[in-house]
Image (cartoon, rainbow, N blue to C red):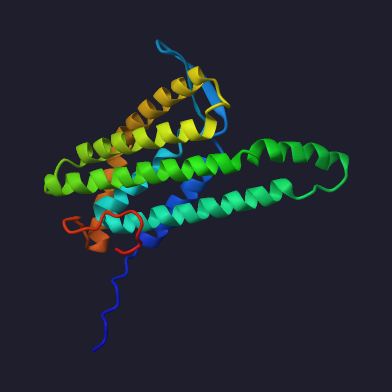
Length: 237
């Protein structure tokens, strides 16, 4: 008797690739830079330069959990872990390779060290924070969907993000920049980033909801995690 082949999905692999791409770029390009803007009525706001891009990975997490379920979102999180590990290893090798002996490379090596010398700490913070935040986000999203019988999508997306981003933002900033940035700046960046991420999620909800509806229609799937094993340390769906 032959074993039935697992079902394939049209867009799952593409969403996984896009999510990993966003995760890599957001964690390696922007977070080491603290930016400031002056806003009317609010004043000076300090935030990490990756602020506009990292929340997209949580939108992908919401979409994956809502359509494909916690188990398949879990596989995407671990794929992101693998990509971050390779990026950390590559950055370590590039920083420590002896540069060619010329004036241009002497200056260029200093820039490389400034940009990627702290990559091991940033990546460690990213992995711990992303794991805690992403799994919490997906768990809350999945449980709320079952409890609400699939209703109140807006509340489920914003509510799960509020829990996930609280862990993610707090852990990342503490692990990556404690002792590097002043504590006042860390607190200011945390408050600004956490509030902005929640607002950003709410603003993008119409797009997220349309994307979810599209995927449910073309994939013929609307997963409910009623009997799911929520252990994060497994790749089984």
